[in-house]
Length: 146
Length: 418
Image (tube, rainbow over all chains, first blue to last red; front, side, top):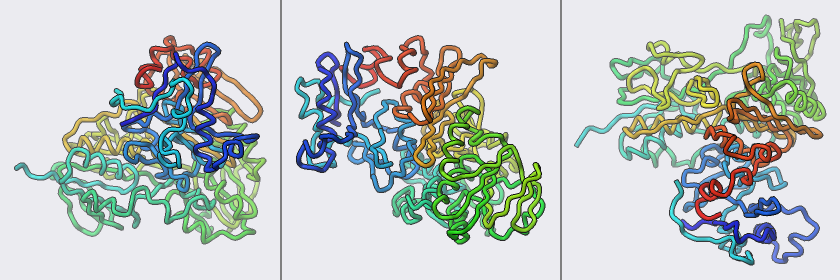
């Protein structure tokens, strides 16, 4: 299935992916209204050390340990994508404890959030990819890992 | 055509659900009988405290969709218990008198609350344990806004219960024989941080003390202290339900002994979940890992093997994600002391702490309180036994990051060019 992949040689470390992610998942139509002067909770995060930068988000594992470990049944796989039911999540953070990519995070409301490939919001395809100025994040089919 | 395999699963918790899904991933047809002592479809047991708190409801606690058993071709025997097991005859006898034959059996009997003998306990009217949905329902019938609650046990169960009760009763006191809270997962310093937070949120503690006797609704402690209460919650600890296997001659320790395929020492008998004692890869010995993720993983491994597949669970470790009133503690693995050849790296901040335990060049465990983001990166290092010499551990000490892994490993990890 199609996943989000990054290329650290091309990543500028501009963090636009984080803003686009937060905007796409805000449910607000105006980017300034959605993000300006607010704490943002992007589901993709740029790691950088001054020389290297790249973005990390959910890998949508084939056999996701977060789903297997979820105590509330909030995490599930839908058509290959790992999704979260915010109504069922109790914010126990077991998924944060087990995700080997560190790709599940708290969203400020006491529940967790993670990349759902923008399939559950109005964008319909990953906003981080659409907004990346240097094609350092792509959305493509590469077969299954491992 | 070969004869269909008949599967029996004793127990109907998360391990049983994992077992059903494991069996069905290999064998789509063999009939599965589930013996469920509790009168409910599999539910998310750890949510009972969230129910008290109002963050979950009994209706929404189902672990699987309503048609789960039907879809998976399972017959569920609600309200029935397995009394005995005949390993030679490959049968299980139920309390109703029926004898179920099996080709492969999985024991997923879980655990039961351990209640130490205490004088006068019978005279306490409003008391309950806190492990099942029915326990939670019983406790709810006791609750009034002016009730004083005494919880015996400052472990995971007792404290989650306390959190769930906080806004529904007038006063909560928690006592424990141990001198600290969460003694099974936190060391003394970390426990202190959590205890202070719990106290700021209204809980009172009587630690290093135990109830000697009850005089009606007054608990008399060994120290001489007394505590009056309206409601008593017994959360001292649990014991694995292992009698079925033990009485049949199978090996048991603190739980039913299983190998990495979840086989017990009895032929065609498997065990999974809180009743099982399997390999803890963080210390290399068998331990009961009574946590939901492990129950599911063990159940699924058992199911696959029962159905003729081949699966091993070699990276199970103890781990816990627990939070109270907004402060989270994430822990995993084994904590070796310097005397045991371990090293501890520590970082502290206001109301937070990060302790990483290493031994022989491996990360063996951690305790994170407060700042718990991306803890899974650490957990994964423990599970994979990744040599720290291959990583920039100095960087990892500050925060879990893939910058510590180097470009090649990152590329492999992220499934392509990074």
